[in-house]
Length: 414
Image (cartoon, rainbow, N blue to C red; front, side):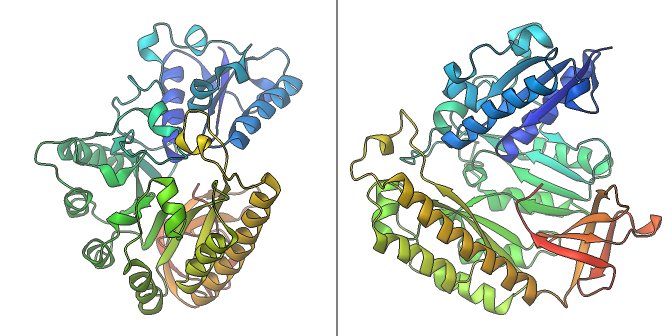
């Protein structure tokens, strides 16, 4: 029986697609391989957000060929759709596992299909894809061209998918999509994300709900106040901020930030120090001055955010930003990105320090080889702690100052 391996680059959408692909491959009689060296087939699900993402995928292909020269390697996803010549020579995924093009995932016109909810085997976290595609026209972003227009899953289907995930033992459900802030705009009556959340929370039971990346215009006091009042919604909000400089946001075609957003987030950080506030930041968009950079840096520090994900600007052919003048030199982009990252490290430490004596609801993410257990709090702290009793293997309260907690990190979601 052939063994296969799937490697994923990029966002939660790609993680979702990869898990769906694994199930389809297993349905066709293959089994997961324990390591690359023992795989007959290897699939890479690629990302196109930056040139670095494509380079990493290409580098991984070379590494895998050295580890296992006999394996057939195929690629799919946004990276190969955006830059197919970069992956010339890879096998065709449909020929390997999926006879019939209708079965291939990650094609813009075909990717949005059931199931909408997936929980990896043996895991405690499930993913519920409520939306796919994007209608926005951010100047730097190639994703709308690769993922297609926004399509929303109707509320009834979301509720059914959530019920199925809960029946499989999910203790946390992550709402995912290309841009979940767009949910509902294409549905009858144009409901909003808050309408969906109210329906999901009413049926979530003892599990918890985590939101993935949110656009800044969605973060109104009405939206955030309601979320903060819900004990089953994770106290973690990740903002697709990109910049806090009005000139840069205009060049990005993202519109201006609400003048009250910073003040409102400051109030949350002060009054609710356990709430985790994160953001995506792009450093070095064409035309970004040193003053623009400092304005964003100061905005982040003054809130303060709890962590940031930093991306040096990467030209994407076919986007308006690729045609903008006044390019920031690559060395300067990297310098600004590094300064943002250093700020992010400081913010992480400060957030962990503020929460060190607070009790937290933890879900177990599995045991490590050394016998220690990994866990995740509702406010996005990743813990390593001495293994709990079997009865505590699911969801349990644990003070972060507990002597069993060996380490605490604030890091990208797994």
